[in-house]
View: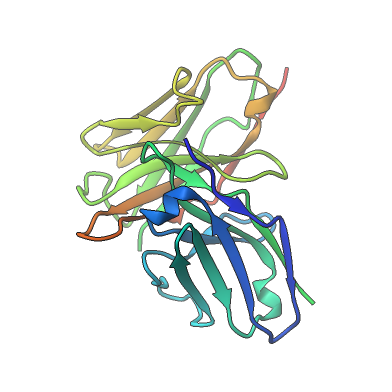
Amino acid sequence: SSELTQDPAVSVALGQTVRITCQGDSLRSYYASWYQQKPGQAPVLVIYGKNNRPSGIPDRFSGSSSGNTASLTITGAQAEDEADYYCNSRDSSGNPLFGGGTKLTVL
Amino acid sequence: QVQLQESGPGLVKPSETLSLTCTVSGGSVSSGSYYWSWIRQPPGKGLEWIGYIYYSGSTNYNPSLKSRVTISVDTSKNQFSLKLSSVTAADTAVYYCARYIVVVPAATSSNWFDPWGQGTLVTVSS
């Protein structure tokens, strides 16, 4: 099987741009999806497919992919974006797989 | 708008079987476009996919849990369920149900979970 690797923690100044990355061999074959999870809440889908946002997700969230790395970019981070972010793709067997998560702090 | 809601005991004794049900509203588990999945999150840790089921009853499980997991679907009640046998303290987690979508276009495939239930904490303790 394969893994999806995320930085454990990232910080960004209020209003600035931050990129959260996810690395894994499977990302060469599958797009990643991204989830935002605030304390005590269920994860919420923020990006899926090549770069699609579900209804209600602000357009400051965007996704991209290059080689074995998928990225979630928040352009103009807001205080309410402080949360844990998880990437999801598939392992070498085609089973769903989550990254370890990145804790985003907005300063 | 599809909504999912988990239900079941919040406390299970070691060696016993954890049983949870997910009730789907605003949509049908019989829809051929989706899979129905269980995911868990131990306290303070990340997300772990447990398995999913198609309305036909076809299942796929995480290999690390496969020997202990059974997921079933009841289309008449618009529900799907999780059973995890021989539980230990390591199975203590918030358990989520979610709709799982897989798209296989000509180029790059994608998959995602949406929506999720609110989650239910299951503690394994005597």
